[in-house]
Length: 386
Image 1 (cartoon, rainbow, N blue to C red):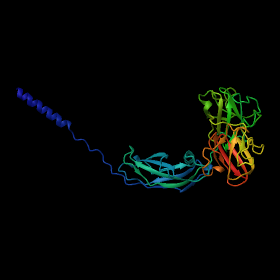
Image 2: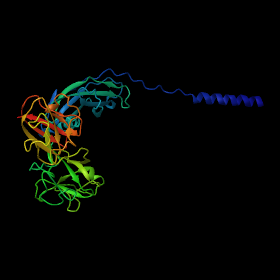
Image 3: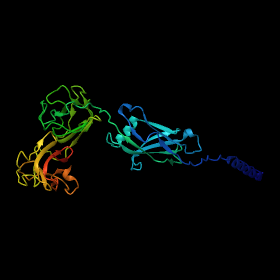
Image 4: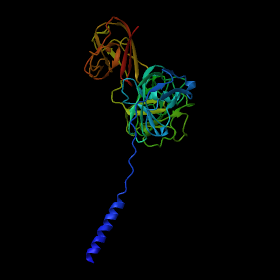
């Protein structure tokens, strides 16, 4: 009897094992893709701002031969500046279709994001990567080249019609007195939509930016000066905010700061100024008629201050092939403005400079009359033959 029980138990186990080993269906097998060929609707794209909402380009490609429902295939379109091998590509994902379109605005945003200059044509590379929805079996297309030109986008904040900006407020050295002292509290215009200035700010106080010195009729301000971190930068606008919260908040610590207002983006930035801003500027050296004699003759070798950061000098009789320095105090050799390496090619026409750097400015090769422009916001100088 015991032997029969053992046989019955073995039979039961065997049946269980056989029934538990049902054959599993084979996993699906997909044929490898072959290739996909990309093409563009145009080889040159220069969109007018008025047409920014219209389709500017259509990119189409052939089906790569996936053995799946074509509506489930995945395509990633990549756009990048030629020569970067798509290292900084902007991408767009498309599912199940063999083409995609870009409006003029979409392409323009891509181009401006690359830092391309407005109105300048650039070569741009485009390719696609085809795959299954899970990114398996990726196939890259050919790379096509399209020449694209970014257009100018209207600035987010209307530009001051005066072309000028002035700092006022108890954060400034001139306080809330209006008109403000100039040129020390006037901004410099760096380009069409950007102004910058360097100011000695009183920490924890406030300021406004005025388009007309002496007038309270209009102002550039902020919506809400209680926003954390706004003293270092943020969004600004024209005649925004209420009387109680529209003023720009200055940094908590007193000191020298550079303020940059970008009307294109509607953003401002406040950063500690790490160089030294002079109240006056003088040119000395054997490139000048006065040679290395210090003090230098004035006003012939004294710069004119245009605003808080820009100085200019028209020097008659510059001696070609010689060198010079810029001094913040006439008659004092204690401090100077100079260059780091005067052997740099082309530096006589302009470039970078700084405070107490080791080498003299290289003068132009030819004798003549020259205009020298110096900007302490950008720490750039420029020499122009008249």
